[in-house]
Image (cartoon, rainbow, N blue to C red; front, side, top):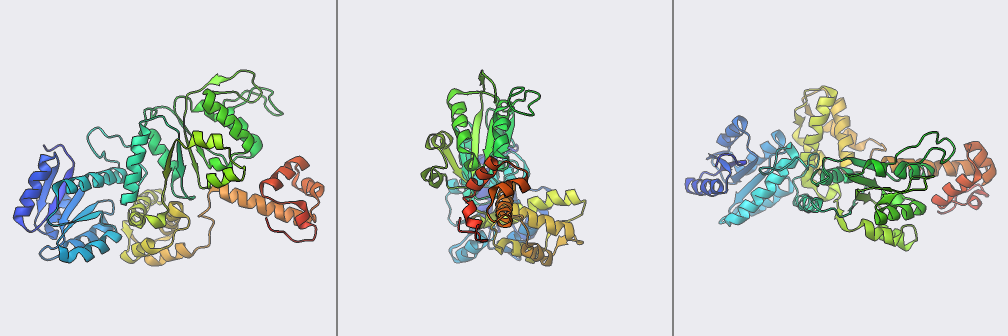
Length: 456
C-alpha cells in the first residue's frame, strides 16, 4: 500500500534492510530504502520522509553524523537509531540531543512499529500533516519530540472526545492556552467557538460583566445590554486562564453556571441556558489556595474532573531545537528575512540554557535573534545576547499587571505615609476600592506609617 506515511530506512546490511522494508510495507507504510547516510540524504532531498529509521554503523558517514546534519537542516524530522550493544552509550547521548529514540539489535518488530507511530504523531504536530488517514490538524501549534509531551498529547487527544471539564496545570509560559485550543480542535465542539479569558488580567469590577454579560442600566455606564463571554462560547469551549486569580464572589457564580448550565447577566432577573465545555488553567497551587480559603473546594472539584500538567521547558530539553526552528520559520516570515536556521553553536546555546520563562521566553529569544541577525544562519553571539538581556519577557500579562499594581500601591502609601484617604485622592479612586486592592496584596496602611514597607 503506497498511501501510508513515508518512512526512510537506512542500513548497510541488505538482509536487515529488506526485512525492515517488508515489515513496514505490511503495516501500510510507503518505504524508501538506502544503504548509506549519503544516499539517505539524497533521497530525503528528493522525497522527504515523515520518519527516518537508521542504523548507527554505516559505511563512511555514520548514523550519528547523519542525525547531527538533520538536526540542523530538518529539525522537525524524527530520527530513530538502530544500535548494536557497543554503541548504546553513543545512542543515549544522541537521545539527550534530540534523537527521537533508539532500539538495540535484535529488536522486536512491535516495539519499532510503536516507536514509529509515536514519531508520526510528532511529525504531524510539527508540520501540520496528519499522523494517520483521517486525522485532523488538531495538534497544530504544539511542537514536540519528547516522550513526555507525546504521552501528554495522547492523553489530551483521548480527553478531547469527552465533554469533561479539564484543568491544565503548568508554570507561566509553558503553553497552556495552546494546549487548550488543541483539545478544542480535537473535540466534537471543534466547529463551535473557542473563547479565552484571562481571569487575572481583567479588573475585578469588570470581570463579572465580561463573563456573564449585563442588561441595560445594570450599572452606571451600562447604556446597552451586552452578552458575556460565557454566552459567546455557547456550544463551544470556554477557556478560563489563571482561574486561581478569580475572586471568591465570582467563583460562587461560576459554580452556579456549571451546576445549572445557565447564566444570569448582571442586573437580569432571568437566566439564559448555555452549553459550554470548560477548560481552565493555572500556575498556582490550588490545593494550597483552598487551604488558605482563597479558592472554593466545590468549584475546584468541578474544574478538576481531568487534570493535565504541562512540563517546564527545562524538563523537555529535547524539544528545544524543534521549537526554536518552528518559531524561526514564523518569525523569518514576519521580518521578511531569508533566515535558514541557527549556527550549530547557537543551537547548542539554546539547548543548554536555563529557561525560567519556558516556551514563551524561548519565543522571545528567537524573535530578538531573528530581528537582529544579518546572516542566513543566526550566530551564537546573538542568541547569547538575547539570553542575557534583562527583560520582562518571562512574565505573563497578568503577572506583569499584578507586579505593577503592587509596586504602585507600595509607592503610593510610602508617599502618603500610609494615609489611605490621601492615597485614594492621588490615585483618583475611592477608599473602598483602594482598601480592596491593599487586601488583595496583603498590604496594610500601618506598614507605611514609619516610612518602611513591612513584610507581606
